[in-house]
Image 1 (cartoon, helix red, strand yellow):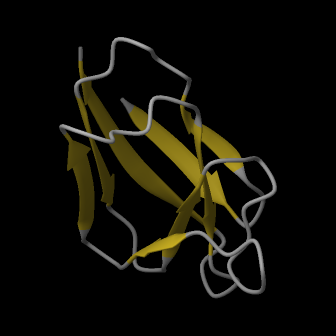
Image 2: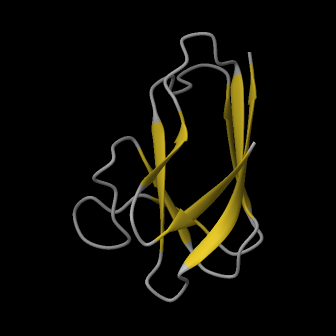
Length: 88
């Protein structure tokens, strides 16, 4: 699933109790920050996990987060495409 992310937080993946793994790929040229709430930011106390340009984040197995994941782009990039793939 492709999602457009900008400098305002958007939902990347809804909560899914059946999630076995997830891969989030930053197809853009800016930095993507991923967090557990819509309050995720690109700096400060609510700063999310950094996924750099053309990079991917993957998670699976024990301790996999099953809640919603949100993303926000750094101020240097207005809006970019992010791909999200879940295995259930």
